[in-house]
Length: 436
Image (tube, rainbow, N blue to C red; front, side, top):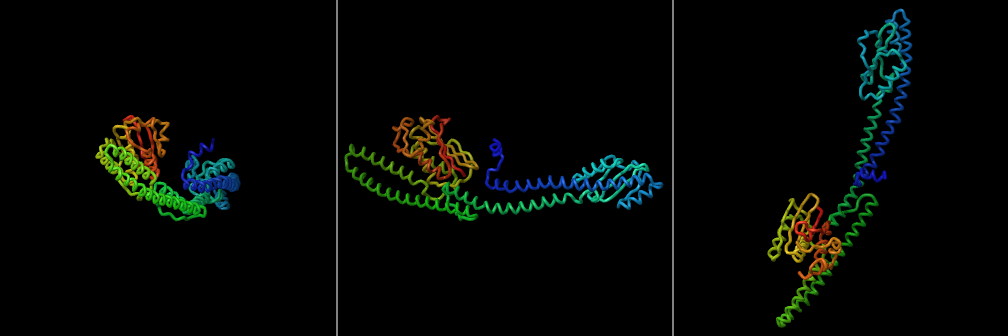
C-alpha cells in the first residue's frame, strides 16, 4: 500500500527516475553528515572550549573582587588571558544576547556561558572573529572582549559550503554523464515511435552494450517488416494485374450478349472488380508514399467536395484548430472516403467535423443510420466483417473492409479508430484519431 501511494509522486520518465536515483544518495549523505558531524562535533568542541573560558572568567572575577585595585587587577588578568577588559557603566550593556542568523554554534555558546558562569549580563557575537561579554562583579560591570575561536571552532560553516559546492559540482558532472547515457535510449524510443507512425527516422545504435543490442534488434525488426511490406506490395501488384486482365476480357465478352442477359452479368463483374479493389486497398496497408505535412482541414474539405460531386449528401459541420500534420495523403483520403461511403450507404447523410489540437488530429464522421450496437463495435472493425443484423446490407454492396481499412490506416499513423453513437444524428459516429 505504501509503495502504491508513493508511485504517484515518482517521476514518470527514465531520465527523471535516474536523476532521482542519483540525487537521493547525495542529499541523504549530506544530511547525515550535517546531523552527525556538524551538530555533534561542533557542539562538543564548543562545550569544551567554552568550559575552559568559563574557568578563566571565574578566576578573573574572583581576583578582581578580592583585589584592592579592581581596575589594575582587571587589566592585568585580561592581558594574561588574552582579553581586553575594563569597567563600564551598567547602561552600556545590551538588554539581550546577539548573534548572526548563520551562526551555527551561537546558541550553544550562550547556554554554556550562562549555565557555567553566574552574573553574565549579555553576550554579543557580531561575527566569527570577536566576542564581547558583559560580566557583573562586586566592583562593577566588566566588559570583556576576546577572540571567537576560544569558544568554538572557527568558521564552522565552511564544511557546509565545501559540501554544497562539491555536491553541486559532482551532481553537474553526474548529470552530464547520465544525459549522455540516456540519450541513445531516447533516440531509440524516438525511432521506434516514428516507425510506429509510419515514418522512417535515421537511427544508428550507440551507447552501452545493452542499448546497442536493443538498437540492433530494432533495426533488424524494422528491416524485416519493411521487406515483408515490399514483398507483399509486389505480390499484390502481380495479383491485381493478373485478375484485372481476365475481368476485362470477361466484360468484353459480355458486351456481345443481349441486354437482358448482359446487364446482370455485368453487375456481377463490376461487383467483383469493386471487391478486388477493396481487398487490394486493405492488403496494401501503409505501402505508400512517405508522410508529408498537409493541412488536414483543407484535405477533408477537398474530400467532401469530391463526395458532393458524386451525388452524396456530405457536409462539414465544424472545424477547430489550424496547422499542418504529417500524413500519408492517399491513405487518409482512402480512409475518410470509406467512412463517408459507409455513412451514406447505411444512412441518408454524413456530417464531418475536424478538430486539431497540439497533441492529436480527430476527424469525426457521423450518420443518421441504424448505428452499430456497442457489443458489436469491436467485431465491426475486423476484416470482412458484415453485421447484417445491425446494418442494412440491401442499401449497397460491400465486403466488410471499409472500417478495417480505416483502422489499418489509423494504426499506420500511430492513431486509432473509435466507434460510438452519434448524439446529434442518432446513428454511428466514427472518430479517426491521429497523434501529432
